Amino acid sequence: MIFLASQPMDRTVPFREIARRMDVPEDFLAKILKTLVERNMVRSTRGAHGGYALARPAREVSFLDVIEAVEGPVVVNVCQDGSAHDSCKATGSCTMYGVWKLGQQRMLEVYRHATLDRLAMSDLHEAPGAPTRPAAESRRVE
Image 1 (cartoon, rainbow, N blue to C red):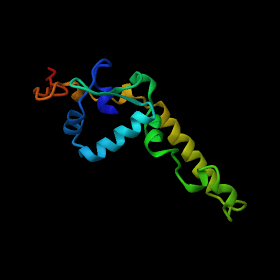
Image 2 (image 1 turned 180 degrees about the vertical axis):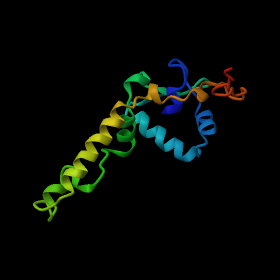
Image 3 (image 1 turned 120 degrees about the vertical axis):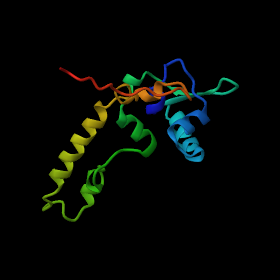
């Protein structure tokens, strides 16, 4: 998703290019992309100029959206999944419940505000095979 966010919105990226540039096994990538297409996070196009692209602008997709599309709801501890707390034998005396709850809230807030446009990597904008440029040049101040 970060790779796709790094591409122009109108660019459809071939499957093999994504796998090669992100160094992800094709079998694994195929499963992830299938799920992301089913969840309307990614759109796919068939044919000679086919490939994958984000289904909506990168600024509208959070890291949390991506995780939950692939993995389901994010929980720090089982007692935070909504059902386990009621069945936990230590509910009445648990001193950790509040800590887990606060940790869960803060983590989700960070993930919710980390949008793909902010996570896009400038190195991924480069055309395949193009020489990479240094991130910053050192300058001597006198």
